[in-house]
Structure formats: C-alpha cells, structure tokens
Image 1 (cartoon, rainbow, N blue to C red):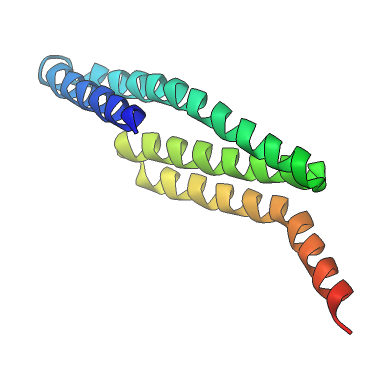
Image 2 (cartoon, rainbow, N blue to C red; image 1 turned 90 degrees about the vertical axis):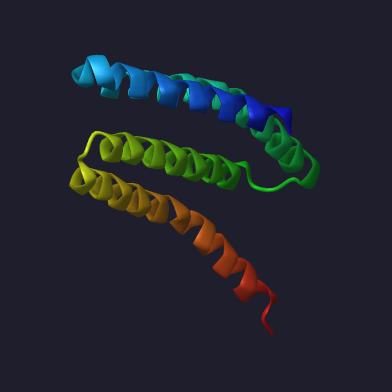
Length: 129
C-alpha cells in the first residue's frame, strides 16, 4: 500500500519537473518526461518481481504447465511495455503512432494467447461426454 504513495509522489515530482523545464527549455521537457517514466518503470519492476514470485509459487504448488506460465508472463510484459511506449508517443504528440503501437501490442498478445486458448479448448473437450 505504501508503494502506491511513493509512485504517486515520484510521478508528481516528475510532472512538476516537466512543467518547469517546459517553461524554460520546451525542447527538453519531453526528455525529462521520458527519463522520469523510465525511472518509474524501474521502480515498478521491483513490484513485478514480487508478482513473479507469487506466480512461480502457484506454478510449483499446482503442477501447471510451465510453458503456459511463461506465455502468460510474456503477455503481461508486452501489455505493460506497449502501454508505456504508447503513452510516450502520445505525450510527445504522436497519437497516430501511439495507436499503431497499441494495435501491434494487442495483435502480439493475441498471437501469444493462442496456446492458452488451445489448452482451454482441450480441457473443455476432454471433460465433455
């Protein structure tokens, strides 16, 4: 719970820094924003490691197929990276590129989800009389 306050505080500091830089050097404001976003992203990576630990525990204790777990982690990672990249594009005023990044991310996620969908269909077919 405390982590969210740290993230919000850091984000507000970054926003204030971007506003201040924009007033004096507008061409550097985007770089400050991107650098701040990267700093936030690295902070969030620590939280993602905790999530990975929980999923690893679940995988070990249930005996689920580890390949599906890896695919799930890839999907989550691609989702976050896609959103992060698209937001950077939007912040720099390139909304058209941001929408293409989002579309590409969704398509890649869909392709990665195909093995999971197949496994679910196999399970459903296996339990049907």
